[in-house]
Length: 167
Image 1 (cartoon, rainbow, N blue to C red):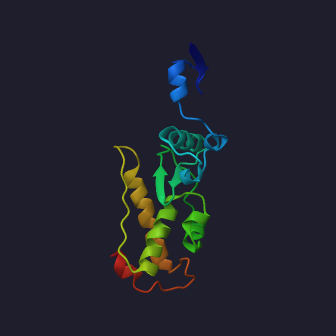
Image 2: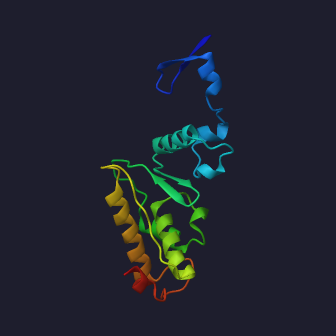
Image 3: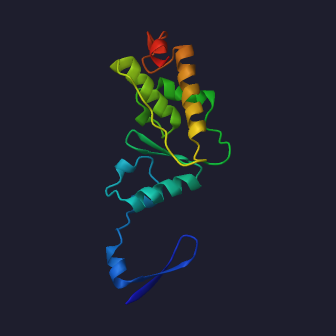
């Protein structure tokens, strides 16, 4: 037998019976576009792609896989980098308490420097035009602001050696 299904854009897609049985089962949670892929009961490539696509359509360009951040270039300015957003991330006890954001990655690195006394590295990868340079600028602006103001989840001013570690 053969089945014809409609895709999201309304296009007809035809599958054989064998192909249908090999498709991964879709869960309601996968359709919602979760913030953290690790919260899905079943994780596979299609679930990851659908979650990021759903979030992107809502102008939510960041999706998490635990502490790994997936970012999709919106190719347009978004109002998600305000001083208030930066402050919220700097003051958070844990970046996982907030929605996924590039500032959360900066928060994790700064916390690692402050509490773990360990060197930190952030890997930004992607194809040409993916937004790597913009992501690096946003991370550096977060770090500069946190070091300058001495803010952070420790609640103390004077980060104590973090500036030297960053340099």
